[in-house]
Structure formats: C-alpha cells, structure tokens
Image (cartoon, rainbow, N blue to C red; front, side, top):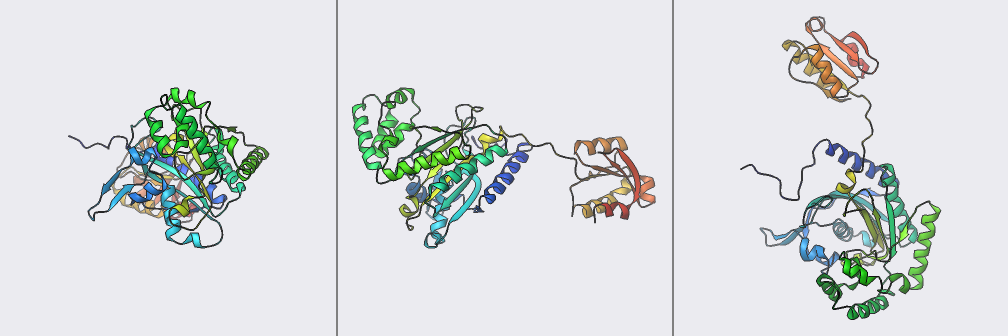
Length: 410
C-alpha cells in the first residue's frame, strides 16, 4: 500500500507553492517597513510552555495538542501557535531586561489535532508579528494598520471587529458580574460553557452554539465595565482608526481563545470564506511575559492564517523573463549545458537535456514564459553561434556565443 500524507496535513505544491512564497515575501517586506525583524523559533517546545502561555482552560491544551514523551523522557509538543515560542525566546535571551522596543515577525507551520475541514488543517501555517515593551495604544493601532496594509496589498476584502478585554484592574469586577449571570443560566448553557465557567468564564462569550449565543445576548458587557484607563485607550484606538480611514465594528462578544490577552482584541474576517471566516486576529497580552517568568513587559501581536487567505490571492501576471536553451542535435548538449551554467549566475534558464525540433523548442519556450529562445542546431554548432528569438518583440537573429552572453553581462 502506498504511503500517504497524514490526515489534515497537505503538501504545498505548485502552483499554490508559488502563491505561498509570494505571500510570505510581501508580508515580510511590509512588516519590515513597520520596523519588524525576522525571528524563527523551534517547532518543538516543552509542553509546559504552552500549558502556561495558552492556558489550561483553552481547547488547544485540552483537546488539540500534539504532545508526546521523547527518547530522553521529556514532555514536548508541536507548537499550536507562534506567540508562546517568541515570548520564550524573548525572555531566554534577556530582551525583557533591555530598554527599547522589540518587534519581531515570523512564519511557519503550527499543529492542532482537530477535525480537518476547509480552512482548518492539522498542520497549518501562520504569518505573525509580536511587539514588546510598548504600552501605548498607538502601537495597537499600528498593528491593526499593519494587518490592513497586508490585506490591502493582496486586494483581500475584509471586515474588522474590535473589542476591549479590560485589564487586571477592571476584569475582576466584570468576571464577578459574568459569573453571577452564568449561575442564573447554569441549567441552560452547554457542557463546554459549564467547563469554561469553572476555568475561564470570559470564554463562554465565544461559544458557537446557537442556544448559548441567544442566552449571552443579555450577559453583562465588557465595555460597560472598563476602568477609566481602558475606556480612554479604547476610545483613542477608535479615533486613530477613523482618522486613518480604517472601517471597523465594535463586537462586545469578541474574546480571544487564549488566557493571556488584555485590553485590545481585534479580528479580520472575510465574507468570501465559509464558516472559518477569520483570516487574522490578535490583541494585547501585557501579562504574558511576566507570567512566564520574565520582567513585566507590555506586548501586542497578531497572526494571519495563510491557508485561509491563499484562495483569496491572485498572482500578478508575470512578464517574460529568462532564457530557454534548446539543442537540435545531440552533439550540441555539452555546449548548451555550458551556456546554461553561465547564464544561471544572472537569470532563470530552462534547458531540456534532449534534442528536439525547432517547433518543439519554441513551444517549450513559450510555455515557460521566457523572453528569449536560444537554439543550437548543426550549423550553429559548427560556427560557434546560436539562433535566438525575442519572444516579446518577435525578432530573430544569429549571434556568436560570446556576443549572446554579453547581452546578460556574463
């Protein structure tokens, strides 16, 4: 029996792989324009890292982690998200003890054991950014504008939802009110919400069960219980987005599924996707660095689900570029190979290792979208020359090999 890829894990093949690289290249450039630098963290980490950062109450920890004991007896896991590893690296390398702002971007595979469906795989890929040591709400707006810039670049339509999750000063008051409300509805909410009520009550607001959603319409609202500082920051954020032409809606039920978020939460959704319509999300996590053993450090970040946006991206039409080298006689292969090797120092070269007719070579050159077709026949081989055709201008000529190479400064 042939071995197949594991369920929920897919190969990234052409032409999708071309679109994938196009996405990463331009996301990286935009992030760099906003002052972010590249970081790469291991795919495998200690399971305790995610238990502490993601939170025991999260479905990720409870149901979806790829965890196992390695040969050294260590409890390790494939990373289910990117933030925890970046924070671990931030603390381990003592950036939390240094002054100044630290802005990182990353991309790579994440792993969650859940039912595979369109837009949700067991191995999926994210592009994300994390900003440390900047408490100003201007950085919150900056991160949202960064995501908008990326989605605008790829002409992806979106809607933006924002909310404030409060801080350690105002959250206890809200939590008490929410628990009182949930106690009164305990016999009506689903089993998952009963579990969340005991571990992380705010997450009940994120329940997808329609019966629960109808109940939570009457639940206390976070925005009605913010302290003055959180209220002022949220109003400032709205004004900054308006002044910069960013449309948004306030969603009082928008909460993050991870325990470490505070204050600003945001989510970008697309109407062109199905049930899994969130394409990017993030928020502020001012408590996470300290919670993981570092010094108190304000932080904010986001992640974009790459698989979810690839279907919404169209590659730009490529101009003809490069050279197709073909031989019409077997004896021309060594010369063709030598020319191809020289040209590849500067440009793309397609060189089939078989002799073909002129018509077949021109068809191959057109298929590879090159600018020049360069053909070696018997006459060209005897005269140390090459027949070329500019496929854009439809011009043909015969040149000496050295003159042909000079065109490309080789």
